[in-house]
Length: 127
Image 1 (cartoon, one colour):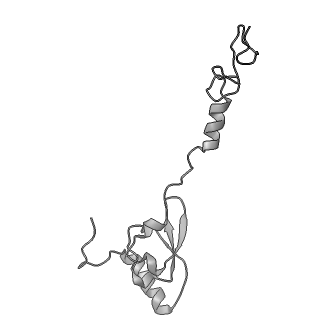
Image 2: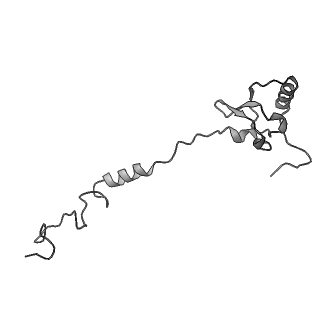
Image 3: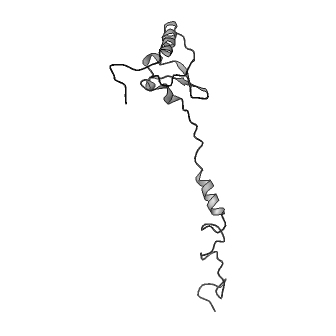
């Protein structure tokens, strides 16, 4: 649920004090913060905040498009390792003995384990 507009955006007091002090001194330095829950306000635009993601501090340069979002949105906490690729799946299936797409698998006209009179003879000339 969204916060009421009459209350305004919520920012940790200690973070807002640091931002206000830097704006007064016209200073631009990286500020470390653990406050992922704080909303980005227009006063923060142009500053770089190092937001903690549980393991390390991720530097986030605040732009105008980020105003209204939370700091935690720009510091991901999970690292996506990726799904297995299609190439690995195809190689796994094709390389398996007895698989449908594997060479030497029976049942098809080109490869086969069929025996009998017609093995190796052209079609229609069985004798």
